[in-house]
Image (cartoon, rainbow, N blue to C red; front, side, top):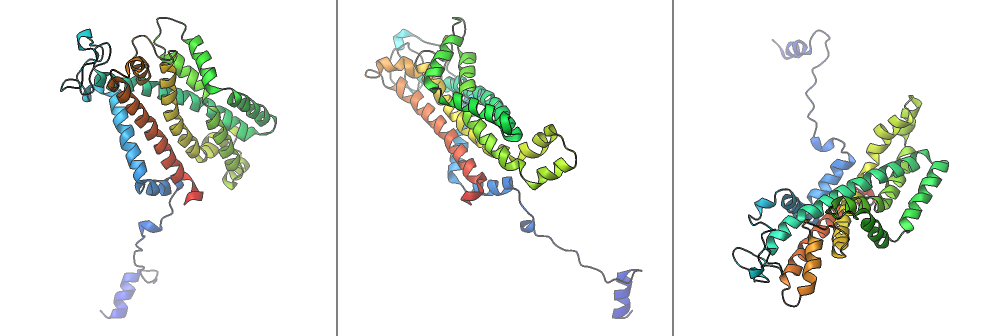
Length: 313
């Protein structure tokens, strides 16, 4: 068989020459915003440092027994203000309780309040921001003015009044009261960010095309606008989570937050404040863990925000 006959046989009945398979380079494929953000995050040392701290704190809150086998409620006055030892790495407080065990177990209440309050703020901010940004007109005017009113209320003063009113039941440990307080007072920034993102998204061509195809308001918001507006909203909630943890500690320090049998960093700092000159360890260690946790969530939120912001590329 000659060379021409071999080519003709390979071409098939149509007579067209065979085409070689095209090798597509994966690097040529278009990437989404999330894909570009993940590439930037992988190169960001601050992101990995904050992520490691967040994972450690979450493990402390969910599985405290992995870090200590001591009982934080096992207290004896004979060990009052005893120094660090092999059984108690951070020493003992004024009640003879293991400071290390109380610090580890204190992460659970702080993280629980912070997460639940952030979820509540996220739901409220999502509803207000999505409604104001999509409907516009008088709906936007009313919702935006209400956001401004809530934003103008002094946060600490309102939190003190509301938390004290909600935690009037002496049998309550204050977790629900503090969660509601922080949730209903901390959603304004998230609502504003969501509103601006929705306004920018609803004017895009893909939303206009979906509207021409007969998509209703609910479908437009849930299927087209919300997925393209949620990135910056989630970043704000990540930063808000760290702020809520610090706010819970502040309210607990003032005596109007968690109470009763609850164990938290704010309560530990408040109880150790009167003995800081004689025994500083019960005050120092919960403060370090609290500061590191808040810093980790804020750094994580900043890193994610920088990665999702196209202007910073």
